[in-house]
Amino acid sequence: MAEKSDDGSFQAFIATGKKIKNKIKAVSTSPEKNVNDSWHLKTTRLPRLQLPNLDTPPMSIELEYSMAKNRLAMTDERLAKKRRNLVKKVSFLNQQWKTLKHKEDMLREEFRKFNKFLRTNMDKRERALKKYAFDRDTNLRRTSEVNNLSQKCEHLKITLANMQKQIAKISIYDRYLERVMQASGGEFKDSCEILPRVEVLLTAKEEIRDRHQQQMECLQDTVGYSTRFVGSKMLTVLNLTGLLPVYKTKYEETQFRRLELEYLLVNLKAKLTTSI
Image 1 (cartoon, rainbow, N blue to C red):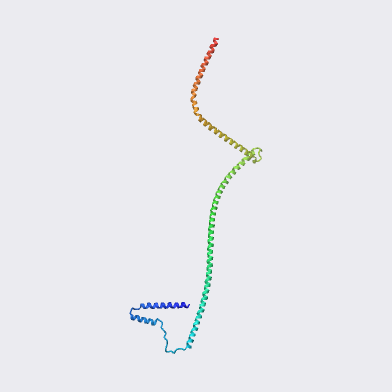
Image 2 (cartoon, rainbow, N blue to C red):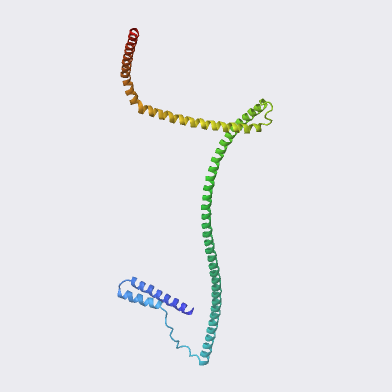
């Protein structure tokens, strides 16, 4: 603290010297005026030396010792007071240091908690993003499933309508079976007894239809074969058709020749008979 006060006094002395120097520079350039101003400044501003007063008698050694002792005691008291003040200041600084240390520790703890809070929030954010992505995929999948189920519901509605139509047809069929049972004259006691007969009839119908289908296929094959055969023999038929008039003419000539021979034979027999 004493060194700081000495440094402050020295800095104040330097500043005063600079101000005096500036004022000296601002004075007129006249040598006499400069000397007078300089002497005036020295006598008024600069500290004066205290010369010993020769008019007063010198003090005794005991008085000087007592005064020096008093000054020393006063100096010791001032030093003790400064020491006590310094101790107080040091204790106050130590207390402030402890307080600042405690605040620093608290700040470090708060920073650690804040850092932990940030890491926790980052982890929560990552988990939230993952959950959001999972929920989004789940929502898309569920939306797709809902659309598929809606389509299935529409298909089931159509199927239900068809089944209702079939049920209506079956109801008509059941009424028909009841009429058949009533018209059977007691041959069938229940409509369920008609079903085996109907199944047999349906089986026979299927067999007949299959047989008819096979016969039709065979007939179609035969017609196709005949058509191909006629197509292949058409040239021969045409040739034979062209030869038919020739053979007919020859046949007529042959018949005429036969008649002539019969006539000659009859005449010959008649001549033989008359000659005998």
